Amino acid sequence: MNFLFFIPARKNSKGIKNKNISKIKKQPLIFYTLNFVKKFIKKNKLKEDIFYYLISSDSEKILNISKKNGFNTNYKRPKRLSQDNTTMVDTVKHALNWLEKNKHLKIDTIIILQPTTPLRYIN
Image 1 (tube, rainbow, N blue to C red):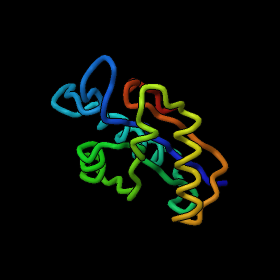
Image 2: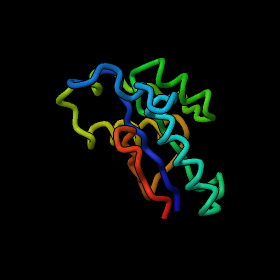
Image 3: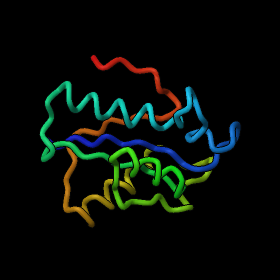
Image 4: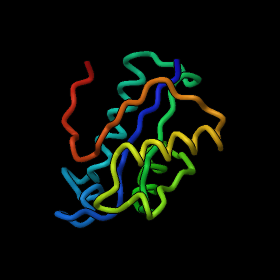
């Protein structure tokens, strides 16, 4: 079984500009989601050949923050899927198609972790 941690973090927002990189306790908001993924993998002793992650973003800043925290996916969300009316389903479908085409991966389970909901329990 292959797991995908899918982190949708587009650049613009209707309410708060650049909210996914807004600082909370001196860290960008997305940091807490990335940190959670690391802890989840470690706690559940997941092997690297069954879990994958994808930061779905149209922002170079967000992708660079992700890289600095050990998450490099080489994936950038297209602008047409970064609009206010874009559905999560369309975003996930595009990412799954990209993974299959570029990484030859078939995903069985998707875990969506939205950076705007950073308070999570590891259990």
